[in-house]
Structures are given as C-alpha cells and as structure tokens.
Image (tube, rainbow, N blue to C red; front, top):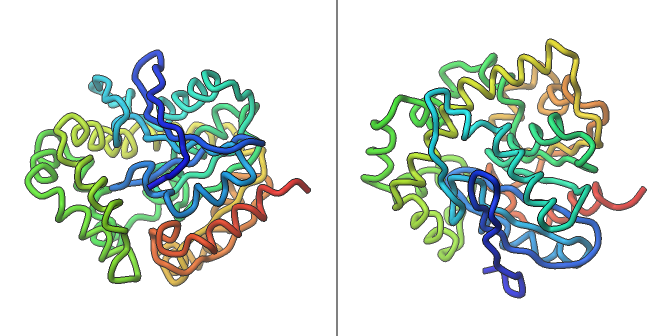
Length: 297
C-alpha cells in the first residue's frame, strides 16, 4: 500500500522497529494509533515523501515491530520508552533532528518525544488527541463509553487480551464505525493489516501493556512535566476531527488548541472533516495541513 517505500526492520537496544521509508529532504516521522499500524499513512505518506524523507514506523508492540517483555510497572510500554525508540531509530538512519507527526497513540509518543528530547524534534504535529493527563483529569462517562480502549485495555491481564483475541475483526470494525464518519473508514487492505496485527497474542498483550502504561506511568510523567513547568519548545500543530469529542467535550477549555497551549509555547491548528481516522478518510486535507505547517518560514 506504500508503493516505492523501502522496507526495513531496525534493531534497537531493547526491541526491533519495522519501518517504511521514502523521499529526500528533511526527516519526518509518522506514528500511528490504535487499532492501526504504520499502514494508516498509506494515503498521506506518498504525498509528503515528495518534500520530506518520510519514515513510517510501527510502534513497539504494534504491527511488525518487536514485542519486548514488559514489567510489573509497564515501563517498557510507556510513551517514554516508545519515544526513546524513535530517537534510537533516527540515530540509526542518520538523522540528528526531525519532525514528528503522531495520530492517536502515536500522538502520545510524539509529544512525549518532544518533551523528553527537545533537541531532536524540529516540529510536532498531534492528531486528534489532548495530553494523556488532561484526558484522564477530564474523563467522565462520555470517555468511558465512547473510547472504551482507555478503560478496557488497561484492565489487568489476561481479560482484555482474551477479549481482543476472540474477535479481532470486531475490534477493528467497531473502531471504524464508532469513531469514523464514513461507512468505510478503512481501505480493505488496511483493514486486513489491522486485523492481522491483532491476531498475534504477543502483540495483543503488548498493546494492552501500552494502555496500562498510559493509565499509570504516562500520567505520572505528564504530572512531573507540568509541576516542573516543562513545556514543548518546538512549533506544534494540533489537528482534530471536526464535530468530534475533542471539539465538543473540551469547548469550555478553548478546545484542543486551548489545552495544548498549556503544554506548548507555539501552537496552531484546525479541525478536519472525516472523523477520528481523518488521515485515512480525508488525506488531501491532512497533507495540506502538514505541508503548510512544515514548510520553511
């Protein structure tokens, strides 16, 4: 689905990352969300590769990347650990600095990367998220019911693992229909890739560990940053789905832009049609927004 992209599995200190890469120019890392893999960028990455060296990576525990052993505190699947993977990956590829755009779970890795490694990130784009701490502090019945992975997948093993393993197609299709705005949110080949990724028990466990880390360590890391006054220094772009939960639930806080301005020094952004999965549903609008943000000023 990413014609012309090279394919590589890169060895990290603690795992392996599967990537696809194409293009020349400044480096741009694209990070996916749940229940997706790097394939989610198949309608966006080729256009961006005309101007950038685009690296689409499967996060640790997802897709074709490795599934390192976890720990009692879930630290191997914290966004801090996942962000460190990306730094190590880009070192291996020869890029000292790079831009990063992340959707959903990948957005959480992306902003943690900008906070932990500010010297490495030139631009940050976060797609359809607010910071993890902000989401949990503002959580109510709407989040619990609408975004069920936050609570379900964070439950102790093995309950969520067994539920996903029993019906991976139902997981993918529910996400597409409940969080999207079009009948066919995912192209057939993309859907097949997402389902296949959820058919492997090791990857399912890793994904659940990532959600457990989000509900514990990731929140603590955000709290520590807020208490220390640590902020995202690079230019930050927030994109979100028009008419979505992010736009409506957080209106009293100024919407996603209002929330992100508590975390980053320079924030811009806009809503995009197409539901939560707008990079797949509205790729042209997504590409335009990213190109405009990343263009030299």
